[in-house]
Image 1 (cartoon, rainbow, N blue to C red):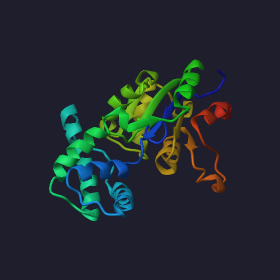
Image 2: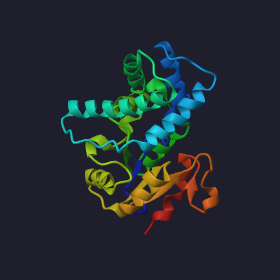
Image 3: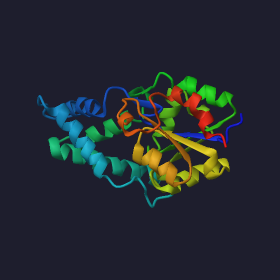
Image 4: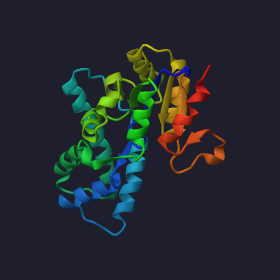
Length: 241
């Protein structure tokens, strides 16, 4: 392969795979089991509350370095977000039990679905001799999800914020991923669905970047985007030096 790119990194959730249904639907279904008072507008209210709580949360970066403490920190980070959601839409007595169950739900690969082109795209990139990695703000539950979805062995590295002690769009998480492949930033391409975290973050760290815009939200911005992962393959030649 003549391209200067030696490694292709991917974001994880909403790039390689997506929630089966929606986060709000899963929250609502489990919350009802534990006593949440369901109203006609509950789904919409949870959707808006989650979007706000997630947006306002601090980066998932923790001082802990021991694996058990890291997982505890991740869980507490998510507890604060989910508690914030139901503080806004209606708290209920068995919230702690509900949170335990819903937190485990997202560790189960059955809560997620691969995008149709994910596997074939990864296979074709591997066939071109490229190394593959993940750079994600997902927590350590990502590892069982990748195994359950059958794509864990496709990736040479997986870099997550809680282990890297940096979260996208901070350049440090990209540097950490680059070090694992022993490549320079200009030899790497990062693909993801977030303009701020994936594209702007990667470019600030010196990597090439490609925005995955499945819904065409950024077409009017005049940006080079792809609408599915398979669109990446014919564009790799753009990065030849």
